[in-house]
Image (cartoon, rainbow, N blue to C red; front, side):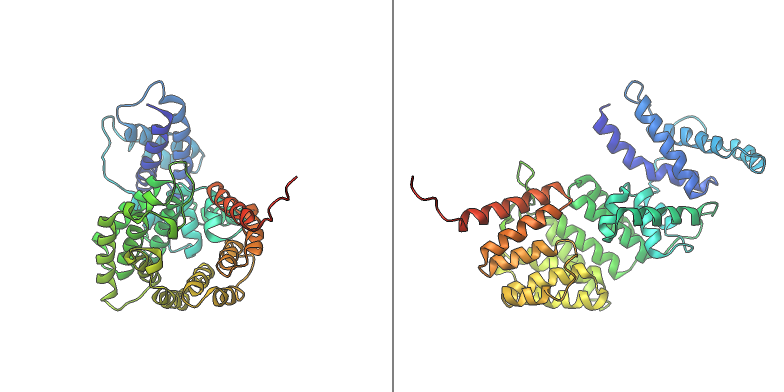
Length: 390
């Protein structure tokens, strides 16, 4: 069993194993710690001695780690009771507990933001840095938020599921992280959202599923074989997944027909307009701006305002886009890159090149940094004066 296979398998098994421990009486923080210990042991043991039933192996080892960690005079009686409930040998049940665990982590004792952060870290498998980037906060701030959330649910029985809105937020952020590079993670988010849509009749669940399908349909065209980013306007649209687009549009239309607009439906509507255009030039930017207006009205999200400035730059001209951008905080991630793009469209290549280079220095993602650096180099080569003959 290769190391790569181990990592993918462990990621998929982790939520279910945590769920087993929680249902058997472990509090969430202790269950997570025990499963992390079991994962470390799996990485050490499995390459030389792979188990016939990986999930059962993890459940057994994690449960033993949990029992070891709860040794104390106060917990002894409870531990002895739990010992009798140790999972029996043989294949473990194959039920998928992941979605249930997402709901359990969205505990009423946590604020929505804390519940999302905790679930992303413990169940979604994202790092603290990835979560901080998604929330536009420093990594240290997010680490403190996750620690507080763990302390809040320590010793609490996770038997009160949270609300759908919190679970949707988690799934959306997991998908976004996968969409930026890890296709398996994005596919897992789509799978769980499909499950949720099958049991919850809510237009925003459908809106999120449509949004994921429409974005995921473009995955094959988003990068070159060498891993370089390809901007939306330059993508080979023949490589888009038309089946996923058709499904996403159908799901979105059904959701919009219920007249209960939410942010995921609005975002999906923007994605549908891009998917509907045969070429970048045929994009209906006026409608895109209108949908971003709805999204800003619903959320006030600064990223939505940033994307709206780009859309305004197409619909009403680059200077109108720059005027919309001027209303936003310059420290907002991608603000400088958007400014570079709009300045280029306005014909100010020197300023655009300078801004692309500045944006590249600020980019945390390697592929994005490479893309911005190449944009700066491209413009510099266009406006650099030719060398005089020697």
